[in-house]
Length: 389
Image 1 (cartoon, helix red, strand yellow):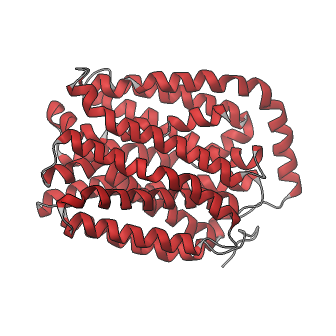
Image 2: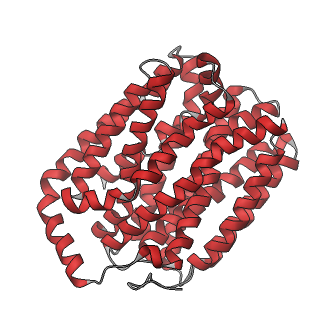
């Protein structure tokens, strides 16, 4: 449990720490808004292309060993990202994206294997750890630059310490679990017919749900501080609003998986998520600036609920650990490929329109599509071995 908590803690912080510093990095390295937005897009492309390989690596080397390697890649990527100029910035970002991709894909299956009777509870603990550390990273990024005088490189590079601690805490799992994992994997393959994920409409709907909620999250991580500074907030307050969005998620990233695991279907939770998204987006565009914390908190609660539902769909719609990992790999591959366009598209639409209204209208469309596919993904059924309709 401690290993899961610490691994989860570094699966978001290296990315959420970038958003409040986008303007600083852009100005220091003379990047365009589109290039600055690609700092968030690049890891998503890495997620998309390498996520399908994570279950295959886990079958061959063991989940524990692959996660240990992921923490090593993450630590190395953070250090390289902060070491020099634009070239190492993007190289390090790609490497840490690879480490995060492996962790993202394998965690749901690991939880299903280790805590079969407590999937909702452990998914809640996992997502809370991820979001709490991500929120802290967003909030302290600017103060580390302005108050501590670390510069943007020191502010981003400091997260290597946490990833190194996570690596050291996870290392004992490799010695304890590799042999048992091999036996469990062979047993799982022999007892269940392989599922054709790519032929399953339910798997594709879960994939779309994952991708659409990721479009929201990574667009806001990249651009929410810029949106809020355009409405008159100082940069440090705008950074804390990004933290508020993620802190607002915390109670719901814990409660939603527990509730989802106890419900016959998750359609009520999907509807709750959609309503909050629409209220939050509309408030940011049309509401009073005095109520910005409320609109941001609504978006945060909706985002936390959507992410938790996506994680639960991986386990609730599959019968085995291997199926959960395969579905997770598929959803995070195609889902993040869809999400990868969002931050760069957000920056492009802002550059073209000269404002944030068109990008926010895009998010309203995303929320509507997410409700449609989420309604079907929330039905009480499994993905069938021969595919389904």
